[in-house]
Amino acid sequence: MTDQQIVEMYWNRNENAINVTAEKYGTYCYTVTYGILHNEDDAKESVNDTYMEAWNKIPPNKPKILKIFLGRIARCISIDRWRKKNAEKRGGGELPDVLEELSECTAKNGNPMDEIEKKLLNETIDLFVKGLGHAEQKVFLCRYWYAESIREIAAQCGFSESKVKSMLMRTRKKLHKQLETEGLL
Image (cartoon, rainbow, N blue to C red):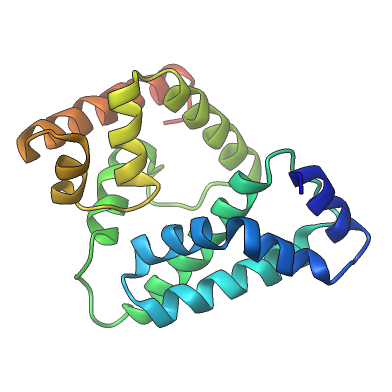
């Protein structure tokens, strides 16, 4: 079944849309959530919350690429769940490091950005990532989308950990420069 057909099922409020979504994108959503939470039960619960959020967001939204739409929802839900769970006991996992590393590029005086700035920032980062070379793009996404550890990325890509760290640092600097050029910092 195509993404457009699945979206139409949501649009028509066909409850089978969730089952079809789970069948087609369940493993992907679980990978996203588990990479952030590192807890099987929390990851499964976040995946279920992802389906419910998709149900609530379609309509009025009509996503062009359902996989990306679901991935963003799953990621946001997982980060929120991680923050709630770790509110008192900071540390553990890769997420604190990932968020801190990216905040060097995206933080704006520690204040939340309004919706227009968020959208522009997202579009700029998307274009930036698409413009990276294959290896840089893979390392960047593994770290900042899937919240994988440096060790995991190095093993997956066949690089040393120091090379991965170096690639990430150079890519963050490029991103920072791009965001400054666009006036987003």
